[in-house]
Length: 296
Image 1 (cartoon, rainbow, N blue to C red):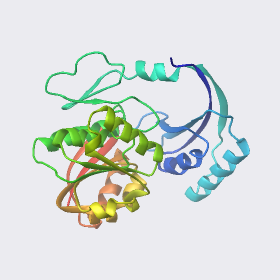
Image 2: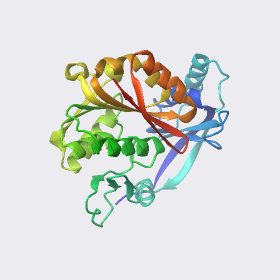
Image 3: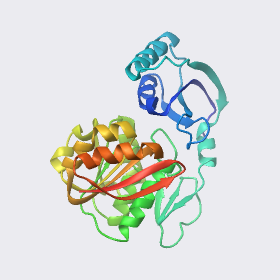
């Protein structure tokens, strides 16, 4: 039976472009790190709340030093962190209650607690909200699923890559849609383990191959190139920095789903990929988050 547990929360507010720096600063202490907009996603000056959860009381001085380093790297003042104890809650039960079945295009995403029967003709994916990002609820993940749904009506892919796989939701959707083997890669070993577990639960363990490493330098990723479909649901800044790598790993005629960016960052990310010869073929915007379909 699930049990209620105490957790410590670290909270701070930062500009949107600084989110990756401060998420990385919190990761050594935290079991999960998330970011939430404070206000409207349409407001370019809106601050974001970066929040980390940990099972042990964090070292406030060590946290402050890492935040100061991140602030210097981004060129802003060090944000004030609030560290406090969260009352005991049954997080597993709450996650299940807060994760009702979700329909996105042809995809039907549900947790293990779902006792019904998936609708006929839908691609069912069992996924519990947990330690890795990607349950289909976030706008960027939903938009990626919409993109896959649209692509499935037009063409077939034989050699796909899910870069920054998180929970593996996109790799699972690709494998189930085209019945092909998918390479799922993430810098976080926990995400890789979660993806492997989710593949087995969904009965497609043989179709999902995983790798752990930073971006396109992940072991085995270069050996498998080029890919005719690349899904990269990450963040704007790393997407820009890896635009050349994406082009080199994408097969001629291949398609890349580039996601995890705010709408206002779209032009920046598009320009970076166009610089390396990629073409924009479509955009999907959901709740202020933009997903790009690029082709080589």
